[in-house]
Image (cartoon, rainbow, N blue to C red; front, side, top):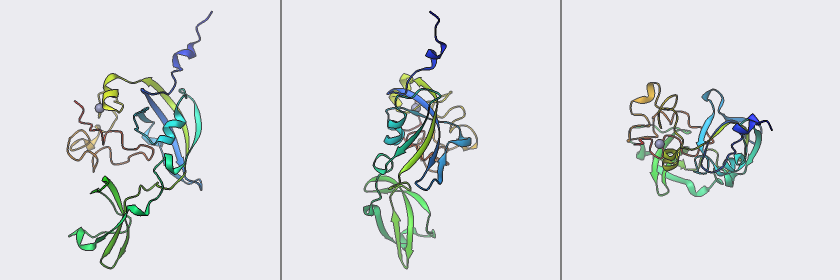
Length: 216
Ligand SMILES: [Zn+2]
């Protein structure tokens, strides 16, 4: 009996595997919201909540080379849009900065650290929106599984995949100019750091930013 060489590559996506996927994300109207494109495949640790639940469920059980359309409803994506996440702050809260509609920033809220968007400025009142920009949206992913491999022990304990050279290593966020004060430094991992520049929409907050990429 001949050994089927394809068997060597048939590891299925399951808990404790590191998966690389290429994807294009569209909204209900077919507009492209995000795509792995030139960034290259997005790598994540399956089962560790690195990516939104609906996408993770859609990838489960696939093997390298598989393509699939995955429809993710808001409740399995970025949640329903909630009016409760709107808050009013006085213009004076911005001090010397001039707020502008659409501006986004990180701020500590009673729900923890969130990205807030300036939704409206009326007179002396600024409306901040703590909803994710994709909240309330049904997401249409076209995905292709590029690779599936067993996770390393350190990856499991850190809860995220490591690229060659470690957490922030080769080709990852550590490379390039972003290094200084980037994700590998303990302070301000996510703001202005290397990981933040273009965080894939599909990625929850795994990656280098959170979870502390200051892996030891
Ligand atoms: Zn790590």
